[in-house]
Each structure stands twice: as structure tokens, then as C-alpha cells.
Image 1 (tube, rainbow, N blue to C red):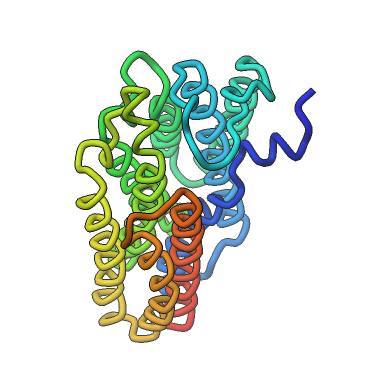
Image 2 (cartoon, one colour; image 1 turned 90 degrees about the vertical axis):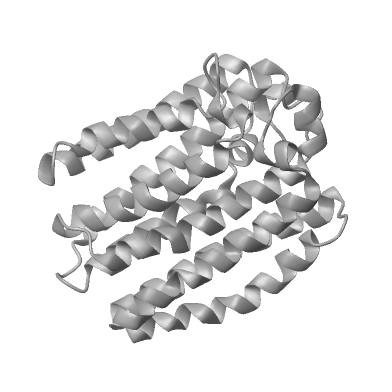
Length: 289
């Protein structure tokens, strides 16, 4: 029987800050024009977490069945390791997606019914990343999907459920949270580049090669910080987000050399930390504004 600790590990809890970051930024961006409706913020956060965990289980399930996790380094995979049956992992994914749908329905009934279509798109995006006959994550489109869902959809959506409008700060904030989330995937794919080649996965790292992938990582972090500037010009207190730059040094250093799996994992963890702290500081700056 799969233990609770193993299910928790399969959910990859260290990545959950990436799900909460756009909710914080989107809510804070909308707060300049209206008071925060706290239950909607909590509901948006629950939807984001359910989708994130469901997506992690869905990837575990699909990658395990395809054999793509056979040689992969990093955290344990439930399906590939045999710790949980494929059916159980699939059920866990579908349960999380159902939770996202139920909470999302409550938000849609109060805010706008078109959010149901957006929620359905998010669930489909999470499932077909590595599922289905032609998973787009196997063709190098993973980073673009992360920017779309963890950046624009989650940030703009969180702002919209507050006031049924989207301020400019939410659009720029989508880049502040979305580009570091892409950087996390870049590190993950760089760590797994050899295993992905063997499994036939043509991730962006496989297509570009290690050197260009490292350059892409730096470009994504620079782009995220550059997106703070237009927000700060309108709300000067938002420039407090630049304090997080100090956290970029270690993950960039770990990635800049021919690194082993351990240092790349450290870079991945540091990038998640950088993404969340940047988002939290930006949200604080917007709230103070």
C-alpha cells in the first residue's frame, strides 16, 4: 500500500509555490481598484493547487506508462517505481482535477460563467502535457504552456475574479511569475536531458542543447525582473520586488557549469524560492500602493 508520505512526495509539494504566486500577484494587482474579496482569493488558490497537484500526478501516470521515467533522476516517481499502481495514480490526478472543477464552478457561478471554459482548458493542458497520443510536453512546448497557464491564465484570472477587470499590473505581473516558472521547467529538463533523449522526449532542452538551455534560463530570469519595471513606474512600491535578485545568484551559479544532478536539483529549488519571493514582494508592493 502506498504510504501518505509517498503520495505527498508524488504531489511534489516543493513546486506548489509556483501555483500560489500568480494568485498573490493577480489579487494584489486588482486590489488597487477595489477591496480584496478574500474568499475568492482562497478559492482561486485552491483551484491553482488542485490543478498543480493533479498535473503532477497526471505526468507521473503518463510518463510512467510510456517508460519515460525509467532513467530519470530527481524525485521518486510513483508509477515508474511501482510504489503505486497506474490506476491509483490516475485516480489521484482525476480526483484533484475534480476538486479544481468544483471550486472553479463556485467561482464561475458568482463571477462569470465563461470561467468554466477557462478551467476546462487548464485541466486539458495539465493532462495532455504528457498524456494522450501526442503530448505537447514531448515536443518542446512545455515552457510555452507554463508561461500561458502559470503566468497569464492564473494571474489574469485571479485579478478578474476579484473585480471582473484586469489592470495593466496583472498583465505585466503574469511575466513576473510566469517566466521564473518557465525557468524551473528549464532546470528540470536540463537535469533530465539524457533520460529524455533515451525516452524520445524532444523537450526544449533536448532540442537546444545544454549551453543554449543555460542561456535561456538566465534570459527568463532577466525578463521576469524587467517586467517589474512597468509595474513600478505606475506603483513605485512594487520596486521592492528587486530585493529578490539576491536569491538569483545561487541557482544561476549552480546552473552555469557542467553540473551534476545534485547541483541542478539545488538550482531548481532555488529558482522556485526566487519565483515565490519575487511574487510575494511584488504583491506586497502592490498592496502598499
